[in-house]
Amino acid sequence: MRKLTVFLAAIFAFAVAANAQGIAVGATMEDFSLAGTDGKTHSLNSLKGEKGAVVMFLSAQCPVVKGYIERINAVAADYKSKGITFIGINSNATEDFAWVKSDGDQNFKFPMLIDKGNKLADKLGATVTPEAYYVDAKNTLLYHGAIDNDRSGKAITDQYLRAAFDQSLAGQKVVNTRKNAFGCTIKKAGAQ
Image (cartoon, rainbow, N blue to C red; front, top):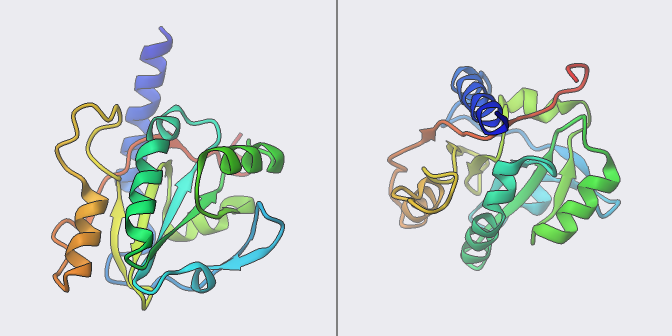
């Protein structure tokens, strides 16, 4: 029964993500500033690499995110030296600071920022975790959506995020600019 409930929740999250409004691919993502789990305030522009950044919505409690930890860190490490940095964003109202800090420090190799009141998530149209927004050096959104096509990691046939990076770094147009993200819904303020 629990597997069915998780499956139905994932289907619902997928449907919500497919209908979300927010920033369009090709638009400029505005700079933002959020408090980090390190106690400092960080902005998109201060954390962005020479070739861009990925704003990655994450969760401390989502089993889908937990299944992606190793893959997310591998992609982040592979592209950091190429000038693309990762910025973790936690917008979940149900996850307190201590939990988010502990999870981020333990699991991720990049800064984790707290989106209180899910304002950034709402502005961008983020609805699930994990959900990726890849911007270039000028903050132009080049890709939005899933990291790859398989939540289990056992049958990956499409590496959407890596493909977007590789095409952009080669000076080519990103072919697949939008792939629906799948995962756990962002637990929004007031909707607990």
